[in-house]
Length: 102
Image (cartoon, rainbow, N blue to C red):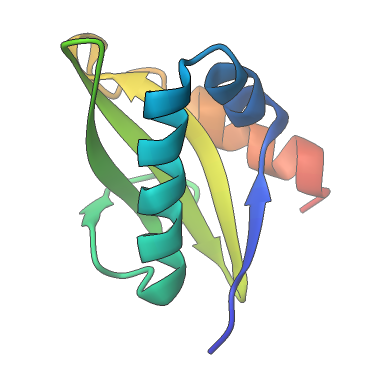
């Protein structure tokens, strides 16, 4: 099954402010996600049933890359700072509905 990758505006803005090495790491993780989107840890969400989290270390900070699977689309949602937890996750997931018109 072939998946189409869609990056939300917020995710794109977050990645654009990173250094080249970190961008390459994120690109490699996205390539792995495209090969097998169910490879990483599932995250509980009230709105979407298929939300996943990828562990990253950005600038000595534990970070999570959040993505959702909607049919044949892989939606790259955001980069979350692990220290703050997942309390803002639902707010970021709401951007899926706004940007994709769901």
